[in-house]
Length: 315
Ligand code: F2R
Ligand code: MG
Ligand code: MG
Image (cartoon, rainbow, N blue to C red):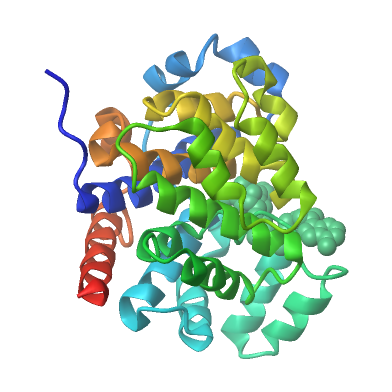
């Protein structure tokens, strides 16, 4: 007999814990070359079955996702002032932030003009994957209203990422999470159509169209493994599309690509967890996730609160 489909609260918890588990496992390998990864592990399953020893400690990806989720729980929609306060209150430099993001966050903490920095540190603003890695709560909260989702994902990006690619990367991941919560059995073509149809830049629309047809794992790396949104967002969605029924393979295969492994696995884990629910995440990885202040128990309760707010907002 097959398992019953996950309930919606299980999907909310699965997405946020899936992000944290992917981030924390991937963090062990951030910056490694693909050749090192495939020399060390023969398959995604081998990596998942033999994670590095000790506690799984998450990074900036999860820390900033917490700020987005807290803002939605408090305000229902993204409120820039509250979001920045949450980012500043939660900022822990040892979580390992992007070079530009760290400067913007330090300005937030010090009460300086962080928005000026976000708009001017890089030409056109940051196109890093920092807005996409934290956006899953927006996808969960606005799963029933895709116009609102697209706008709320944009608003959640702006304090640090104003470049159109940084913003659209976040919109794509939010949509990928939202649509994943809706389906019991994935229709890949319909899924990729839904995720890509609002994209305005060819940098996302083109690769998403190709990812819909991906059938050889060896081609996953063609979508990129880097720190830029255009070099990682589609890779995460493509990995989910290849192995929708396995959280382990979905995050394991992107970690084996090397490069920005924590962020690739955070995004892929958020999507896979939204589809499979928390029961789809290997228990031994959840067990190992850190559980101090803002750790596993906190994230699980935050996901439940987000689900309650989502539920109440519908009523
Ligand atoms: N930063 C890291 N990991 C590095 C090592 C951490 C180390 N272990 C430690 O302890 O310090 N990981 C995290 O950063 C990525 C997300 O970055 P985010 O938030 O997008 O940051 P930023 O600085 O805005 O963008 C990242 C880099 O991309 C380049 N870039 C962005 N926009 C650009 C533009 N318009 N022109 C030129 N370059 C641009 C810059 O090099 C940015 O620094 C995640 O991997 C997260 O895990
Ligand atoms: Mg990180
Ligand atoms: Mg990273």
